[in-house]
Length: 554
Image (cartoon, rainbow, N blue to C red; front, side):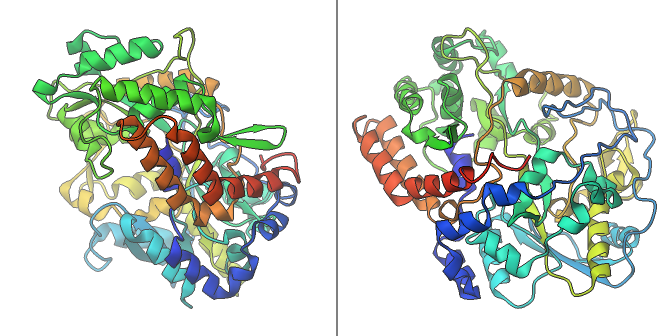
């Protein structure tokens, strides 16, 4: 995980978000000691996580593993069994709020897909759809208001970057333990299909306070333009630091406006793994060390200086607004080493008319090239969906049934409709039976229901069965070497409120060093400032939780 990924997880509640949540009377609970007391590992370990019951109604071409390799299908199943035998809703309406990454689709009065969804759910789904860029602020104002939707997505991250989150959950949202702990989740079999490791991020105050939106253990992929590697005559598996640098040089030709990397965090991510950096934090005997404080990080920063001097990074690498995906698609850069693994599908769609385009994934070896470097595993979630406190127990069960429908597994009847809508209207089938969205479907089906509940990821690329084998093999190689971030499943109020500006200040300073504008000796001062402004307090809050129990709930 790169510093950029870490920063994104700490973003909410700058001044505005914190103030709004404190306005709810939560400010008295904001100190780390109180948070640790109510949300300690010992308290949370008392929670019984849901029994994991994998869906077996369809057999993948390539099975998943307990370690976290995703199952893979070469084509969409021809038979689509129903996973929810009864209509979940009982009329009326259910409300929710989630982020959206596309243009807001037409409302239910002009959207046959939404109408069909309501019919299948047995309730009118009332959605507030908020652009991802505005979601954190909208979340804060929604919390501060008196009218909460029935289902509310947290801003993305693990933990969600929300100030005083354990206290907020206890005060305004539902402890779902009675309905989801252990075998109780059998009433909601599609939710039971969500792996155990994903649920631990929804445990607060000793209870289950949300439905996790699952993400794969692999987290990110190291994408490459395999066609550009082939043209340059270099291996797509550079072994060790020296070969990696020489590969980057071979891929770079400024006269042709081509560089190995577009953004600074891409080589940094690979070099960090080569050098054995921790996955954000390293835990030893209950004590935590952040990657910024390690010799391995210092080595990575020194390597970054060499990469910058070698000219293998785009001249605008330190501009966070740089359109790195577009540059990758255009062949301006050859390596995009820090992007979410679901991006595979979008890159294929973006380049379906480019006959030269060949997408690949790059393994990473340790510094001397003798073995694969440890993979940094993802947190397992995108966000969690909280359910506001309900006066009627039966209505709570209805909401859970709706979420259970939305979490239908890959290939089922419900999944097919949820993603592709009605055949002949929203999608057509290709020669191999794969659903392909129509223009209407592309517009209508983007309701952000996947951020209220979703099934575990399944490797599948329509019309490209070979991609299933390729990605499955890559995950099978990477995941067994994986190391986890030891604070996943824990909560630090400082991480939610103060780390974003401290982390940005550190990264900006480190990038000044890389570009030669500050001496390398400045790193020690940057680390000291980060520790003073956020790091030491974060560490104390996490360690207090760790030292009151055996570890995060599993």
